[in-house]
Every structure is written in structure tokens, then in C-alpha cells.
Length: 245
Length: 245
DNA sequence: CCAAAAGTGTTGAAGTTACACCCATGC
DNA sequence: GCATGGGTGTAACTTCAACACTTTTGG
Image 1 (cartoon, chains in turn brown, red, cyan, yellow):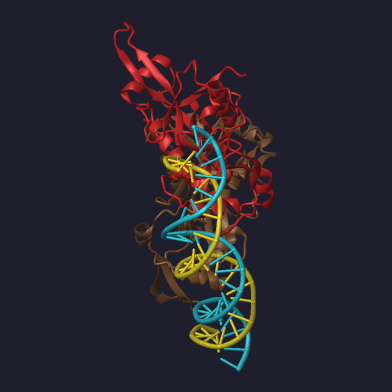
Image 2: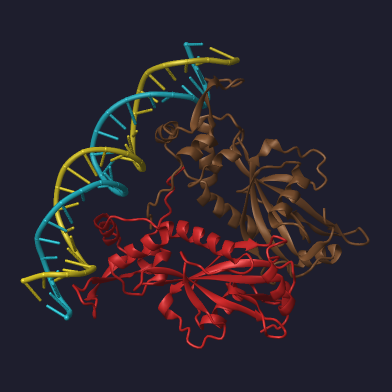
């Protein structure tokens, strides 16, 4: 790997993780902490997205994947480059300036923002060297740089995208129940969905395949498990040109 | 205006223009021409997107708007930042290298790509200092750098977007006929649409406002003119959460 | 047997697709 | 008066939205 980083170019990763148990759509953030030289004052103590500079000989997508692997150990996740952020004042908050002085990077840095989709429980955070932590999308902590805005725009993109492409299954375990899919849609979109209509709609899709399996270890009636078949989806997919303005 | 350009960061603009007369969706390109020092050989002779480096103290959106104004004189057009292109080898074609040697810019340049929507006839190209020219999206010339790919991705984004947001009207004159809208959709999407169904659908939208005016100067039956009311659209707009996977 | 979540059907409204002919105008 | 493009109606079908109760299971 190339060791020269491009001083004014970074990637930032909005990592969305869904927790099927708590029905919470989460974002993975890392701690930004800085004490004064004399160690008697906390100068910076907040959270930021995981991100890093792009290397001289590295593609943007590869930089994002590298950063994510570094934080979580995971590869081959759903990833989308959704926007570049590069306004001249995006790193100009008071704490940001203190931080940058310490870290020595370019005040005019452009970041290419990605979001990733995974299941919260896929990531082990014990002894994570970045003090990474999950936060509900509805209850984010104080965020450094322009990362609040980046998260908001990622979330907007996710909301639109999950209505049109089957990316929802990236956030669910391989085997899931219909009600889990419904809960997830409700978490992402912050809406209520009629269970009967939703169930019928999903079960009628040929790429939602019922398994010969039911939930185990639940204390009530165990639900039917299903899987998503990308093969079938791809095979039967055809663009629809419904003009919906 | 700040005069220091960021050497490794540019914006590129895919300018889509629709020509109502010829029913052609066009892209505006500028000439890239370079002779050998002895002027006896043409080293580079192709087309590229309009673009330029971002200045040190300039927002990305502003850079795109500046570049577009410089080329066309126009401001306040529909503009969308749709993707960043930054692969290490995106400027590494033979002709690209010759060109860059001459122009002296960074071999590893990241570009933030935008597309703009306007009417072809809004732009006057006489004596254009960049030798700008319109090309049909279906008949593009040889393109420098990775601009073929950038145009393709812009076009894909436009296809999706025009089904969901009323951006189609950015490509049409203020007063248009229903059939002009249909022709435009057909040009963009490369599909056939049933005229009766399309007409009914559009006329039923409250924000498609019939005017007390008909076409003039046509040699056959003049058609009813309509306008798009963004005010009404915004007022009645409400997100629909139709899950369409 | 009881608490909890899973699972089930019908109806009216709205939207989509398919399809062929007459009309108004300028020349 | 005729060539050209503008404009119109209906029926079958599909999809969507609204709505409440029964079933199954583990404990």
C-alpha cells in the first residue's frame, strides 16, 4: 500500500447498522478527544465519522473500504458514495481548529462521503482502538467538523434508496421474518405500515423465499423465516418507467 | 475571486440541453486541441466536458456555477452534484498525458462532477472561445480523460431523477405543449409512451397549468400551451412512501 | 390457560394499460 | 380539400389503503 496520503483529500464513512433486537437504526461513530498540553483541560471531547486521507495511488472506493476495514474488520459490505463535501469552512469550528492543529492536516480538505450498511451485531466493539460506539440515528451526540450534515444527507439518501432498491436486506440477518423487515422500514422511514398489506406485498415477491425454518429461542409463537434471493431478484428485475412526478 | 487554484481538485460539468425542435437531448462539449511544438502534427484533437480547478476559498457548488457561467454566460440553472471521480488512472490516457504536460496540472486530480439542465437554444455558441458544441447523447464524439464515463453516469442519474422529480421542465421552455413533454421523456428514457395515457396523466396534475395561449407559427393545428407551477407543486407535494422493490 | 406476537381476507378506490378514430388548422 | 399533428373515451386489470379478529406457541 502506498504510504503518501493526499493532504487535502479524505473519505468519510457513515456506517449504518441495524439492531434487530432493539429495532434501532444506528450510526457508528468514533471518539475525538484532546487534552491541553498540561493535561488539565479537555479541549475536544466529541464524536466524528470514521474517515481518513486517500493515498496517492488509491481509488476513492478503495480508500473507503480500507477505512471501514480498519475500524470494523469487515469487507464486502454494501457501500455507496453519495456526496462530496468541500466547502472552505467545513472544518472551521473552534474544536475542529484545535484538533487540526494537533493532527496537522490541510484546513481545506475535501471529503468524499460514503455510507455502508450492515448489522450492528456484526461489529465487535470491545477494545476498539478508536473508542467506536453505536448511536441511534435519532439520538446523535455532539459531532465534530461537518459530520452532522454528512450523516443527515446520508440518511436522506438511504430513505430514498430503500424504497427503490432491495438494500434493506443488507441491514438484516440472512434469515429474517416479515415483521423484522416491516420494523426496519418503520425505523428508517419513521412511519407506520399496515402489517397485513405489507406482509402480502412481500410474500408475493418471488425473491422473498420462505425457508423450512422457524425462529428458535423466542418465548412466543415462532415466526416463519425468509431469505432474500439476489439471484432471483436480478433475473426478474426490469426497469419500470413509471413517471411519478 | 480567489486566484489560487487547488492543483488536485476540479469540477466537471455535464451540460444537458434539450432541443425541442429536433427532439434531441444534447451534451455541451468543448474542444481539446494540441499541436506539436513544430506545429506539423496534431497531438490531441477531441472533446471534453467543461471544467476547471476549484479555487482555495471557493465552495464546490460555486466552482461548478462559475465554470458554467464562464462557458455559457448563464446562472441560476438546475444543478446537481452527482458523483466524485478520483481513480488514480483517470487522466492516464496517452492524449491525456500529452495534454496535462502542456497544461501543467496534477496527475492525480479528483473531480467533482455536476450536471446542469437547460434548453439548447438558451446558449449562444457563436464565437465561443472554447469551441463549444452540442452533441446528441446518442452520438458523442471521442472524449478525453474519463469524461465518457462521467457523462454516462450523469445520464443514468438523470434518467432516474426525471421519473421522481419535476426536473423535466428545466429542459423545456416556460410554455410548452403536452406532446413536447412526452417527446422529451421519450428522448431521455429511450422508450415509447402512449399519448392518451400520458396526456391524461399530465393534465390531471394541478401544477400543469393550461394557459390562454396556443402555439403560433406552426404549420398545422396549434397546440394548447401549458406551464409548470413550482409553487403549486411545492404546496401539494407530500412524500410518498411506496415501497417499490 | 394466558400473554404475546403471528398470521389471515375483503372491499372500495385509484391508477395503469391497451387500444383507434375524429378534429382543427394552415397551406 | 387535404395533409399533419392535436386531441379524445372506455373497459379490463392491477395495485393500494383501510380495517379487526383468530391462531399458535412457550411458559
